[in-house]
Amino acid sequence: GEIREILNKYRDKPLPEDWLPYDPLCENCGRISTTRAYGWSGDYVKYVCEGCDYVGGCGHEGKADYTKGEGKLTWRVEWPARWKLLGVTCEPFGKDHAVRGGSYETGKEIVEKIFGGKAPYPIPYEWVSLSGKRMSSSKGVVFTLSQWLSIAEPELLRYFIFRSKAMKSKSFDPGLPLLDLYDEYDRVEELYFSKAEEGKRERQLSRIYELSQVERIPTTKPQRVPFRFAAVLSQVVGGREERGLEIMQRKGFLVQPTEEDIQRALGRLRRARRWVEEYAPDWMRFKVLEVLPEEVKGRLTEGQRKGLSRLASDLREREYDPVALHNRVYEVAKEVGADPPELFKAIYLVFIGREEGPRVGNFLSAMEREFVISRLEEASRI
Ligand SMILES: [Zn+2]
Image (cartoon, rainbow, N blue to C red; front, side, top):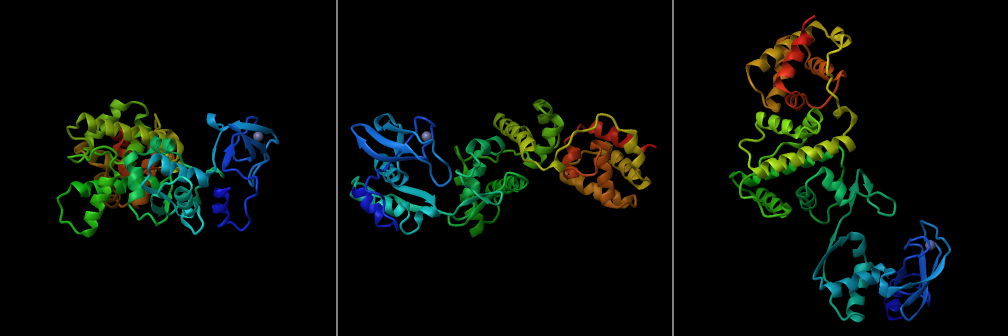
């Protein structure tokens, strides 16, 4: 009764006389949002499963034993009960709970008057949207922690939350924008360990980096394989992780790595593989052609063949890192008098049989060097 009175102060339409602060679990259909409690005796709460605004009920009438957890307290009462029970002193929550008459305000009154406790210090935050849509568990627009961990490191999630102020809306997209998030995190890490001149922004970023760590803050800079590269590499090596490690070392991403560095790199490789399977756009997915089809050879122009040939001899002479190789492809195109996009197309064609793919520097670097050279040479011969 007292709780009902508190809640009614904030409601246009008062709660009914028989209202109870309890949501029983329907023993017939197993749903909780569809039941309405209307009375109780002893350890039992009587209910009817009648549905709510977004889903119908099964019509079952029954009783739930609240000492056995056959239901839960209504949200607006459960929250203050938890504050009291767990001794919560500080509570971040979505801004919708912070409005006048929202569950923080009613919770504060309930915890003080009913449970004899104190409301925690409130930290309202903005919503997080998922690929442009508002997250909503009832509408199925959700992204779970285990989904996150399957494609990104826990530090990245903390970084994602801490990189902007709590009252700024955040938008998460597990597709291509995830690659930018990875890049950004790696850059901030780089900055944290560089001994560069520090301004206000640098100090802020360093603090964000520290807060993003799940375990102790590393004392030396972890060696990182860029996720973009890992996404390409994972498609070349598949489950052959040893080969993946070899290529990462050859490309200079791992230099005399510690066991921890190796585990981190393998972790990224596995996550990248899952990301490609589930979230990568089609143009980033590929399968390397085992043999060069005659049909592809026939499509190459003289300029394209010259470019491929020049590139092959360059690769024989020295090892390029992915960025340098990307730039080199541009130069080669100009040197042989071809349009750079034409040379890019030729490269994708001879390796994957279509005209587009992941960034060319990453793409060529992820494959075995000897294989790359011989394929380029083969394609450049008439
Ligand atoms: Zn039911």
